Length: 412
Image (cartoon, rainbow, N blue to C red; front, side, top):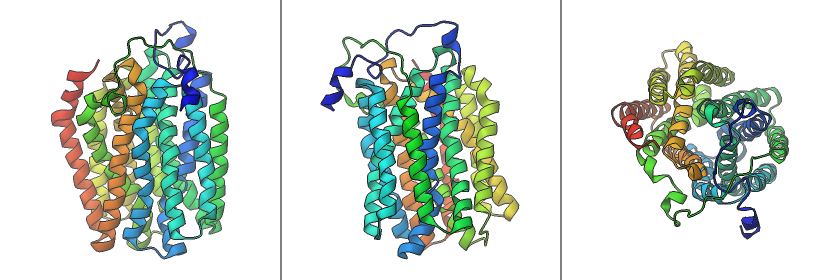
């Protein structure tokens, strides 16, 4: 870390006065596109493997469902441990150097999957991979905020979130298609490795505006690692993350073993991604106008209907319709939440705000993976997804009756 200290006054330090000009008000500027590209490739490389890893562990190592959940949740634990420090690092050191270092480590870890010959080795690689993944996502999203003009920030954050949500939806479809076409997991690992390398190259080309160091910065406190002002919002978003964790990790096994849908998971994620794109496009005006709580409320309600329909499983039509509804809901909910986290933070806490929402989401994701694996193994898939629907409904109620008012009182 000491190697970065000499750069503390450069782009990664803290936020100073922001200049405004006609050119700076352009949303789709060159640096923003580079950051979006690197973020898309980071998530695409990672989630290309996500729905197939349970099948891989089942076929390659004959792992039980609860063991699969334990192995796959390892990266979440590592991500959670590193993200508070990631927010601190990008707030205090050169953000571009931090981003490049983390992205390079993220790229290298994909080689570990290719060489993992035992379940234990795979679990170790997967867990270690969570460290650079967690740090890179925080650094990249903070850089995105830096290169956005302040007048377009709400809208820009919404579109930025589309890059990772879209990757999380499209990548599983692509992975499943490639797997069914080739029946070759090693090929998938190599594809992810190459995509991560391209994403790393994109980060090396980003130019970040220099910012003045903030003088008389508050003494080191918990707020440097987690945005305590947003504690209720953090609880709320973690509930939604739990639902995504169960659904995204076990939908392939569920469709294959319970519904007999062997080739339909790709279509499921395609519809999910379509919902994400549509909701981002139609929700941009609400974000630009600052209607964050209204946009978020619409999203959580739509997602609740989707998860309920998924749990009911009235047939293939409900299976696919639920994917579209969940995508529409999450596409409205998540960017609104991200903007809410940023708006309750000081300007010099942008990294902490980004790490805090990601910590909260990943906490829910990790619990969802563990809970989903346990319920699927010892009770049933149906029970697992009904619990998911109930958690989503509980999160929606919490937002409507408490969290939105909590945000309005605390925004800066």
